[in-house]
Image (cartoon, rainbow, N blue to C red):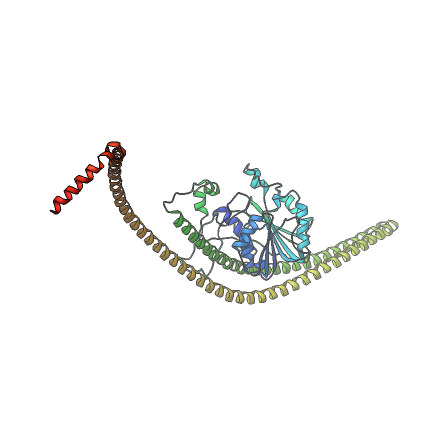
Amino acid sequence: MNLSFTGERYVPELRGQIYYEHFHRYAMVLELARGKDVLDIACGEGYGTAALSLVATSAIGVDNDGETIQHAAARYTAMNLDFRLGDCTQIPAGDAAFDLVVSFETLEHLAEQERMLKELTRVLRPDGLLVISSPNKLVYSDASAVQNPYHVRELYFHEFRDVLRSFFPVVKVFGQRIFAASAVHPLRGAGNETRWLGPSITAEGAMSALPDPQYFIAICGRRESVTVPDLCSVYLDPRDELLDDVRSGGLAAELNRPPGNLDVTPALAAQLDERQREAVEYGNQTRRLQEHAGGLEAMLEAGGHRSAELSARVEELSASEKRAREQLSASEEHAREELSASEERAREQLSASEERAREELSASEERAREELRAAAAERQRLERALAGLRLECDSMRDATAEFQRRHEADLHAKEAELVAERGKLDFELMIARQEALRLQTQLESTANALNARSAEMQELLGRLDESENARRGCEQMLAQLKLETYNWQDANERAAVAEAHLADIMRSRSWRLTMPARQFMTAMRARRKTG
């Protein structure tokens, strides 16, 4: 059984823009969840928690609606997956229980937002991360002049950033929005190289900021030493149903479309619905695996971008070191020039007036000493800055080498994992096709059985007509029997009257008086017959 969409909780059967927005968020954090203990607060229908469980050590979904939790627990099952009834201001979990907490489109549903964030810090481990999203009030409500009845407290950018910073020392905010793009893609397989083109693309090939994000997504760390990853990504669905959704009127048209009328028997309709649900479930499993593979490929591409950024950072630090050296040399030269000028002015003034020259020389010497001290202090500051830059440059070089080494190892491991995942996907796709073929065969068998049943019904209708004719003949015979019965009853009544009359005669006196004569006459007749 699928949950119905009320406007508050998203269900994965919906397509179009809302599908891209919700699935992108979970695909974005798949790599962060790998091998971690993950909490999905306000998990809703449960599709996102189930996706995270594919890579996480454990995944727990929490929601405050009992029917939704029962549905999620029945639909998504795995050894490392659990769904619990609870509230985001009182999470049913112990302290420091999770490495990663995700909360998508939840904060705006609460008036007590600080209480929710305090509870999230309680269940998050010291080195853990929080990924949280909320709509941009300026675009989501103000610009569209539409108010979501389920939203209690929407936030502008500075409100969202400041409330997160009051609980997390490290906060990095990104924007999310749907945008139009044109793709030149291979007809089969995958391309060897993908380039970003257009006015929103930087010279290095990375996508720049887009205006008017509809949602804010923040990644937060509990410690300043925690490194937060870059969440920049683009979600692409090969089925590309977004434009179809726009042409058909979007989510509102989908919810208002009347259901179709099917001319089938209730038993066949129930059987077809069951088969359709099974097919949808197989499709959902296949889609989740494909999305997982796409998320892994996106993370590999992001690793390449991160390597390029580190290389650019190393070059920038080298340039900063060179500029610092030039500034230090210029400061020393400027100090020498000012000292020479001061000494020259002191000599000229000494020849004009010895006393005044001594005073001015003393003043010049004092100023020169101060300038020398200032130049020495500036030189020390620049040297310290230069040492810090050198240390940072060395650290960045070491980090770059380590990252490249780990990236290459991860790349090989992920390539092997992708090959295994692809084989698994091909096997599951083959199983799904065999199941679809079996369902089609069963449907044809059911149709043949219905046709045979229809022929039997026609034969039964013919027999029913014959029975009706026989019934009418029986009714006519019954009427005739009733008439004969009536005549028989009338004859019986006349015989009874005659018997009564004869009994009266036999009881009469004349009958008794004439009885000897009748007996004599009878005897005479008998003798005549014998003689």
